[in-house]
Image (tube, rainbow, N blue to C red):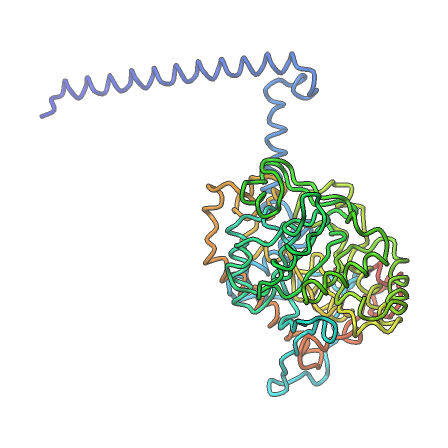
Length: 505
């Protein structure tokens, strides 16, 4: 039984130890602050720290934390870049399969130059008039195994390496549930791409990962074996991507694990840097020859992906196709937007290189139409098209299919922490740190991926029905107007670069 003396002794002892702890802690803190003070006033690299020792260090802390807290406390719904809160919120709601409606009117200005307005019909389509969109046919009459793509909205190129294994697995399973395809990106075909059983578009980058020989050249035998998978439906030859037009892929050394190295056919632990371009393709003739060669080896539809910059090649390509024959034509062209992507890239290229999709997509569609190749060559487009209105705009302009990378990253739980080029992604999507990957449950996220895709397709049809057509594939330029400099709507005209340049997506 505790006596008053024993309780008093315990209390005194506790106070003594507490006082000792605080004395030691204060002493240690004082020594630390003294060391920081001396270090700051003696160093010559940072003027702020030299002039304001210790206190100056908070600048770097706040600068770092501001990157993460800006979206929660300071940014308005429609002002943040690269994606604002309104854009991200719709994706999160769609992925969670919760109500995506809003109330009390739009927060989007409706009279700014470049804004898109869809034109509703006086007699919208009723439910008994809805029709399912026909599949998009790729390579019909030219590939041994043409592909009937069931969906007009699919997963864009993201490599295993840039993405974690759990993220790729979740995307694959989600794509299967939604009935959409998944592009492998240039990092090769991994078991995680195949794990969900979805349709696959295999991308061949400039380093030809997964289908390369010891010299980095295309190996026909490896290509044939890889594309013999029933899941692989098409092959995409990547010439350029939106994040870094004119520069090859960049995978930092810390992300090149033994598994990734084996899939790509490169040394582990070394940065994976793709060449700026294909060493065996130097002109349009060689491009068409390579496309025809890959099609003959694989039997699958083949196209290429690029970012439009200098545009004279578009007409030259069409002229050369007519000269060589339609069998040399690509089965599709994927147009990426020159405004950045998911991976590591020089800021000068992300910010300033390549035309945005609002300019390049109509240019490509109009050129193919002018040369009578619109039916032969399908057009796929990507570039910040993560919400229904943006995707519907692309369909109105003439895209056959829209693909998205960052939209599906948001569906996985991406919070736009801007850590994609490091190995520190807090949501486990773009990191190979096993502890961080534990936060991403592939089963749960696969469901969210499927919900996002299905909700997107549903709302695309909602826009189409309001415009008076049976499904989203029937949308065309007559169904949308652009707000001009006077704040008035005007029709989207063909071959009007000045008009496209003002467009706001």
